[in-house]
Length: 169
Image (tube, rainbow, N blue to C red; front, side):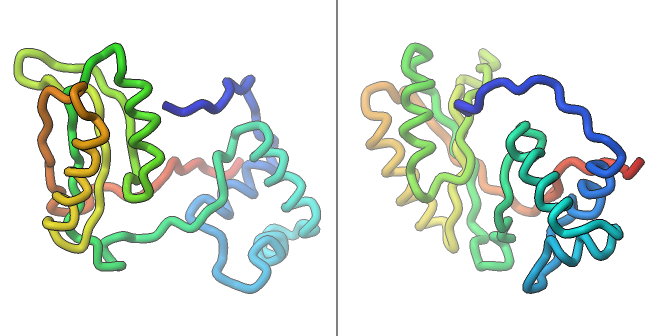
């Protein structure tokens, strides 16, 4: 469902790797985070910012954004809603669902018959299960006649909450 164009292979040099290693756990929570990174690495801030812009343009960095911890924000009824929809329409429907403001993840997965008929996955968050159920009802309405079945699998704990980590050098 990601319309991002394919990027050619990008290879970081030693400075890029140092910047990645210094920022991969997050930017410092200071007024000028790029300046703090630059100071820690002994580089001019303009170099750090230019290289990060270049990594964004190359697709080596997808985006720079806040990653909230939904559990700490009180969203503890998180459910992976799985949907069995017409294969001919799964991409179109996935794009429509992904635009819903309460869907944080939406992607297509292969079916695993005979026990797993679902081909569309969406992550729904809520403070209580009733909130997630209401959001799932909105998705069901959007899917209409293309929907053949669904389930909501509620998470009980966070097993992994990090991105890729590389080493400097």
